[in-house]
Image (cartoon, rainbow, N blue to C red; front, side, top):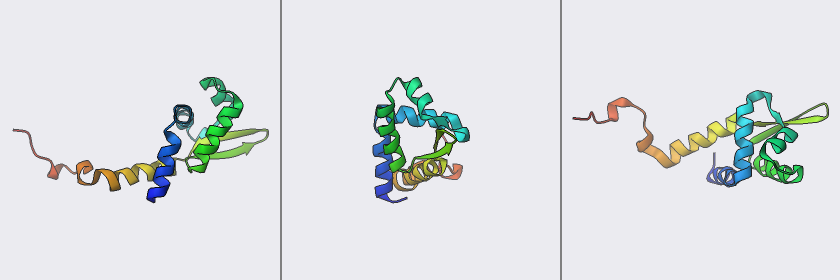
Length: 107
C-alpha cells in the first residue's frame, strides 16, 4: 500500500457517517448489506448514503455486488488488512513488534 492509498483510506473513514456505514458492512461480513438497510439503521437519506458509499468505494474500502434488484455492499477485508499492515510497517515499526524476546521482563 502506498502512502497515497493509505491517506485516501483514512480520509474516507474520517467522517462520522462513513465510519458508521463501514462498521455496519464489517459486521455484515461476506453476506454484505443493502444500502437501504444501512440508510435505515443510520437514519440517513438514501442520497446522502450514496455519496458516502461512493467515497468509501473510491478509497477501495468497499465492494459492491448486484443481486437481482438489490446492490449489496461489503467491506473489502483485503484492503483493511493492507491498511493495518501499512500502519504496522510504517507507523509502529519496532514499537509494535509482538516478539516476546525483545520485551523487558518487569522486575
